[in-house]
Every structure is written in C-alpha cells, then in structure tokens.
Image (cartoon, rainbow, N blue to C red; front, side, top):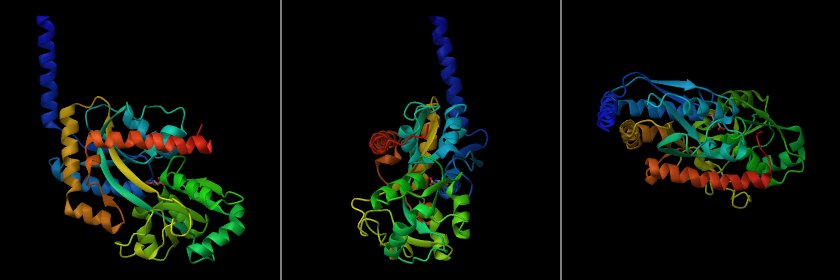
Length: 327
Ligand code: ASP
C-alpha cells in the first residue's frame, strides 16, 4: 500500500509538472476539411487568438480531410492525450454519429469536450452560369432542370451535405440532383465559380467574400430569419420566408482533445478558448463572415457535451427517417 501511494503521488506530480509546462511544443489543430474552407478559416482565426493566451504558443493547422470529417476526428481520437493535438469540427461531429454506422471512435466517449466556438448560417448558392437571379427563379429553374444539375458538398455528414439534403427534401424535387463530394467546400467553391458544378449550400464563413465579389449567385440563407444585421447578407431572404416551412439550419463548431487529456491541460485549453471568445478582434472577424461567437454555457466543456449529445439524437431522427447511411 505504501508503495502504491508513493507511485500515485509521483505520477500526479509528473502530470502537474507537464500541465504547468503546457504547451511544451507546438499545438496541432486538426481540421478535418481542406485548407481555405469554412472550418479551416474558423480554426485559423481561433488559433491566432488562443495562442496569445497560451504563452504565444506555435499552433499548426493539420488539414486531415476526407470522409465528411471522420478521418480527422479518428486521428485526434487516437492521438497522444497530452493537449498538443486537438480537433476543430462542426455539426458533423453529431451528424456522422447517425450517418456512419461503423465509426472508428465514439463521439461522446473518445474525446474531452473543450467548448464550442461559433454558430454559422449557410447560404444557398448557384454557379454564375445559371440563368436565375432570385430564389424564386432559381427554384423554378431547378424544378424544371433538377435531374440534370449537380450539387456539390464536402462529403457525407458535412454541413453542405446535410443542407443540400434538407433543401432538396423541402422543395420536393421530382428528380434529385447528382451529388459530387469534395474534401471540403474550398475546392468545391472553385468548381462552382467555374460552373463545373451548379449548386452548393455553404457556410457564410466561406461564401461572404465570393458573394461580395460576384463570383457566385446567392439565393437565400438557411436561418429561420434573414441576417438583418449583416451588411451584405441582409439582402437575401431566408428559405423559410421563401415557403420552405420550418427550414432552419445553423452550423456550429467546437473544440475537442483526445480522451484522457489531463484535466489541468483541458482547463488551460478551455481558458484560452474562453478568452478568444471574448477577444474583440476574433469576434469582429467572425461577424464580418456572418458567424456568431458562442457566448452561452455551450462554451464550457459540460455545456458543449450536453449540446452535442442533444444534436446527435436530433440528427439521428432525421437520418433514420431518410434511411440514408454512409456505409
Ligand atoms: N466545413 C466544411 C469545410 O470546411 C464544409 C462543409 O462541412 O460543408 O470545407
């Protein structure tokens, strides 16, 4: 017994030291989508702010894209639980739980929840080659030509995939569009601009600058109400206003560490996250892209986990009703 106590004390002391020294090397933020896309943008802006509260630590972004985000999530679930590898992911954390029946990790058990980051509306976009200019014209055009058009998304379980599914279901097209999966909406956006694909639903963090530059056509926002506070996006109607009853979709992002990361380290990460969520620079950059930084209880680990558990249950109902799975 004596020996065991000594060992436990020694182990606790070792952890205390490592937590105190944390971070002792660069922190890797795994982004499970391509560089330059919406999740990447959020992660980079957040890292810039968080590092100020982590002794100016070096933060490296690792774009581990593919399979709707589940490849990057698996990588983090299996990483050393020392706080130097974390994940920034969105609603896919909940959507893929219902969509993929053979995940390599358990969403609620294999991560330490560090807190939520933001809420992000989406916009429904068309290629500049489409003849429509308003949502009404767009819907009529799609009704007539839906079967011939392509819808781009960032993989099964991504935000663009869920949004595209919900929208097609709500407009009740006779023929669903062909879908094309990318490793993120950054590469998909290039093809939409070029007119290789016709339609995409994407987060405002990726679409605002493209809409402003006139490179794509924007038809509507996915939130229940229009974004009346945003200087550019306020001009677009909500899908609900356009007659799609109860259509309301907002994407959210959160941060995760591998299960077993010591509490003193997750505390440091959450403190830095909470500081970033109050950083006027970060708030301003997010607002400019239509995103809203989380201010409520979801910024705490417990609030974050409770929210995701709820979203898993909600999205599972939708996915089971659609009967479409990723495996
Ligand atoms: N968040 C994805 C990305 O960063 C896009 C998506 O989920 O639709 O590319």
